[in-house]
Amino acid sequence: MQPKFSIITVTYNAERFLKQTILSVLSQSYPNIEYIIIDGNSTDGTREIIEQFAAGLAYWSSEPDNGLYDAMNKGLQHATGDYVWFINAGDTLYSSDLVQHLAQNISRKKRMPDVIYGETMIVDEAGNTIGPRRLRAPRALSWGSFRSGMRVCHQSFIAKRSIAPMYDTQYRLVADYEWCIRCLKQSNFIYNSRLILSNFMEGGISEERRKESLKERYRVMCRYYGTFPTMLFHIWFAIRFYYSKWFLKRV
Image (spheres, one colour):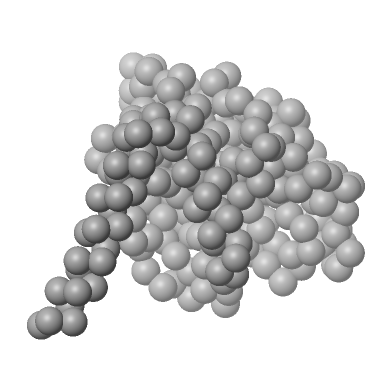
């Protein structure tokens, strides 16, 4: 069994980082990869970089869109693989033989997993390793695991295409979080690869955008986990946070 992976990169004005992402996919030793790039009509040199590697792509486009998640939906619409995997500009696959190892591990299973997940390494804009993601992937994952937030980095979350829904574009900042919950709710077999799957490029985020993201995430939590339990969880988290700060000041 050689499952086909549709790896999708969504990009906009990312000429500084796109090449390293493309090379990390095209250098994979595993042959059954379909690589798709969706660009939002970039105004820098992004399109020229895509054209440089066009021969290795299954599909690419460069046209206006309605934001990140609209572009990701375009990628899903063109995917034909058994699995879909989003690796955006600046992020990379962890090693050149990663997909080969992953496919070999899957082939030993009696059936194909609905969701595959793993660990994430954080890197800076120069590609230097900062260290593992602070929030480690749980040993066992379910849709309830996301009750406390994004337990698995989106770049290390692979979904079977047959269960992968379109992104809900009413969420401007956390549609990936909501998408993962829906994928997990539809999954019967969730597989922990126990591999580092991706390098995630750490980027700055404004305080205003962070607050907006937290508000959106709260709405998603209320939708899937209930308003009252979500409110209680945030009260408990706030108490624990402020107590830890008070304790550190005392010691």
